[in-house]
Length: 180
Image: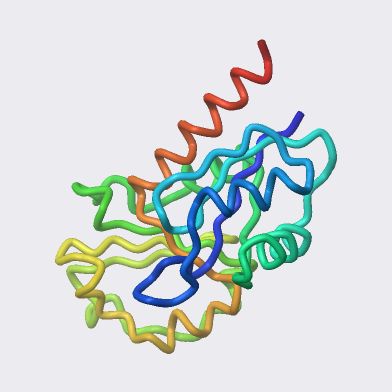
């Protein structure tokens, strides 16, 4: 049994892509995924499966079940934990709600950004499948231009560290329950 975490892009942000989490759960259960749980109203789901799961299958299931098409970043619980644990900015973070991980296919494809001096006190670092960001003035005050995030591709989606920690805890809980 593998525990997965699905991060849907752009769900319930402003007035776009409105989706009830009960509908998201039902859509994932309809394709045979087990113990589906959601977190917040922003398209975060944790579930288990005996068979391999593909992001495209989740996108299709969600579109069929909710009428909303959204890109999905799909990680195993281990992959999520690894990406979060590789965050080189953790020592600087004093408020996890002001730090994000943007999950991407390949961070090396990101366009050039402002210099560190232009971003200060904000900090940005790149991992293989993530862009890590610390915004001490708040995420809404980020100095990174919108074109930077657009350059990360159509599936890139960000979560603050508080949400990532909660998803890891949910995945660990589900994994422990499955092991019993």
